[in-house]
Image (cartoon, rainbow, N blue to C red; front, side, top):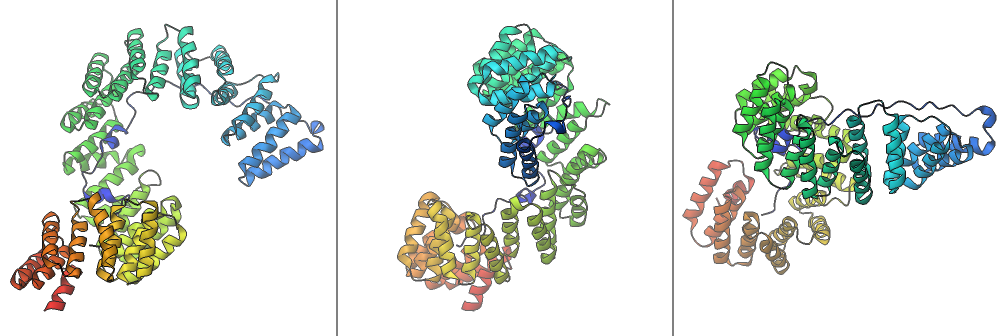
Length: 577
């Protein structure tokens, strides 16, 4: 059997409205927000006076601006760092540091930020934070700590909030050794502040140092037993240690004691992640019935209803949430999915078309293409997918493959082949497109192209069972190169011994070689696993050659009842009529 496209496309979830992953529910909202970030203000810097501009400095400044406008960040960074060194101007140095950091040129960024710090300019917290980021990335723990101390001295926000904001910068920018070194110094400096232990717990969690991460999280809960964040972090650590029951108990007890809806939300999310959807539903219902609006909990409840196959309740939730700005597109997307599953295509289209640009827009548009195809508007479906390729060029391969899937079936083979040529020309190294073109080429007996594409795939992925099967079947059915076909199919069957498509291919090879008894055994096994039309056609032909015509006709008749439009069955019946 020549496999159809094995697609992992963004609309695969349309197979059922209950296809909601646990992560969808968990990612609705982080259980607890850590703290407000440090207030950032623009630095109070002065422009370079015209009298200070010599020719070389002016050349560097103009060169940096022009390069930046052209998108050449490397050149812009080089020009601005040179201008900073020539002028010693804090504003130029700040801009040079920002551009170099964006360009990931830490050496240049460090040179520029040193110039800024050596000036007499009064620096903002934003500039200090930039300096901290650069020193952390450069691995300079001493200068990082110096900036941290200055930030804390100059900050006018509560100590815990400042420490948490600093910890976030350390967490995101420091390598292991520098991050641990810096945070250990902060813990020693503020041994009674829960925030620093929280930061160290997060860093240790990232490093999978679970013992230290757990100890620090426990310390947070002891230093401030009224702070929900500590219990949320402890639960995350326990989950990381695969101690889910302890994590659940931690969240449950803390949520009840602190009357924290964030912890209750986290508890419900972890229940959902553990696939205990009934229990999760109870927790989310508690949150939405408290009177105060909590759209995040409502949305999670709607997703849980889908996991419980309760589409009617999910519809009510998402329709109510559609009126909430932050959830209008998300709700419209899931409403579209529910109606699609119910084959209420008009309603599904209405909701999918209401999904705005953002996370679900691409999936919604692809779903619209699927609906158009299923309702007979193939050209409309193709137009949507062609537009999506232009709109989301990074995902062009997915849309090419989806369009190819819609064209599969025999009557659009020339169009499909032209489409796949276009796709491969655009992305010649994409293996999935090569595989798809090989199928289209085989249908048109363009065997040279088909073989070339499949060998291209196998050169890079020698154990690709789909490509091995496709090449083996093509050689077995379209040529007399049976020895080569057997080599490819034997390798495929060793990788996936219970794959019905590969068993069918090997059975058909034996049929073509005249080994009808061997073919019968393989094809019967394949048909038992997957009673598909093409396998039924092959099995019936084998029975026919063994003189068992009555069984063959009965088999084909039963197969046609399940799949009346299967072209393989129709072709064999016409031929043997």
